[in-house]
Image (cartoon, rainbow, N blue to C red; front, side):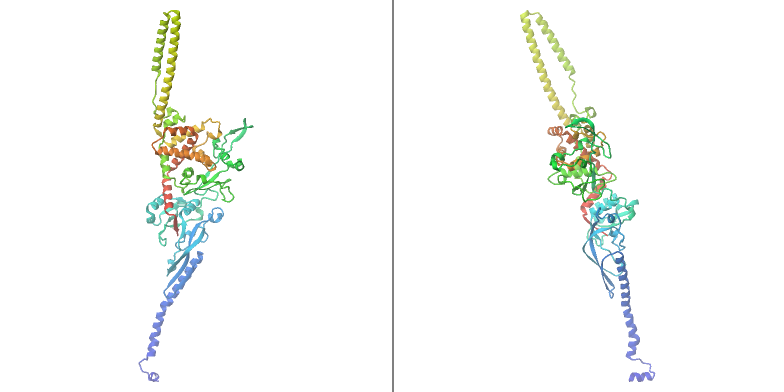
Length: 576
């Protein structure tokens, strides 16, 4: 009543209710405004985040705290691997149709096989702060995939990565696309948990290869073309003659028939048509993985004849696997196509670079003429001594015959018989002396040959290739066609090694024998005798070692070593 009375009287004072009404309410409104603002901003950011996730097709759980202006996003973490080259051909060779625009999502450029390995929870205020979790991928598979698409390794980038590791500058290019554009580069380490972080970039028009090309880490071994049958001399009741025919890979009679006919039962012998089917081998960091027969192009791994390769797998108990993988890597390595995966062992590389074969040994084996080698053997000139001996003998004979003529007939006949006996004994002694001298000189020549100047492996292989082509052996498997180059012969040798375990064992035993004498003071007499017994096998061995040596001389050799070392150190990487 009192307040109403004062109001009626027009007094100037205000009650507590008026003060609360005129001052408290606006203050309360002002206090609510930040909450309303935070709510509006948070909801707007949440809406934008949901739109980004929806556009990128990312399954996620979102929660928001409008009071504290925090948005919580829970995204799955993936381990990925490339799609299958054959069964998922469309996805493998094309880029993704729904790339992510969220930072850290460059991996969505491609189609992947994914597997959820965890969850990643992020708390952000703005949509720009959202990061897509990096995926985990095997480094070897990632590089192989990009190589298959046509990306080119950058030598400087791989050298930097090998030397600096996690301290490699962000943005350093590892692989490039057409025009030198970045295809794979080093990314920031945010959220990589100590792993190497990479960023990928690729456009659909950059792909320069297709399913018809041989995949990286695979090598195609050509078979010897089948011989042409013509009328000629008969063998085994059949009138035929093996004639070398031309083709993409020149034929080789010595390598046409594999020795699987002797190592397998008759019921398991291969049909004659299969001898002309190429073999493709996959070479991984651990050596050969598989060997497949193929028709024309490697279009699928299904319904192909998988060949047994246990005899050429890399094992500590046998050197055959290392020799085959090294030779196959060298055979598949060119200036355009590099088998990056397998690292040729250091001891084999060192051995291939050494000069280990004395040139005199090649002369003793009739591989080269002595006139084509540096002077290494002692030369003997026995003509003057032989002439002096012959003159002295003739003079003694004439003197003896003159003395016999002065004797009575009975004594003359006895003296003549004694003279003939002495002459025969001297001739026999001369023959024995000549034989001893010849044996001593042959032994000295052999020792001189073992100590003669050593030749480079490539030069030895070239002479052995010529020797193989000139062989007149009746066995057609020991001949090489005159028009075959060294690489073609090596390809057919590797083809034969896949099919014939006995030949592989014999060849690798010879390689180990050669490597052992090169590492232990040089060739010995027993080694030379072994080469004489199996000279054809040793000639094949020199071709393989020369191919390995040529591989190490390519300009890309340093890049290959850098890439192989990086793949060995970084098994798994983060791609974001």
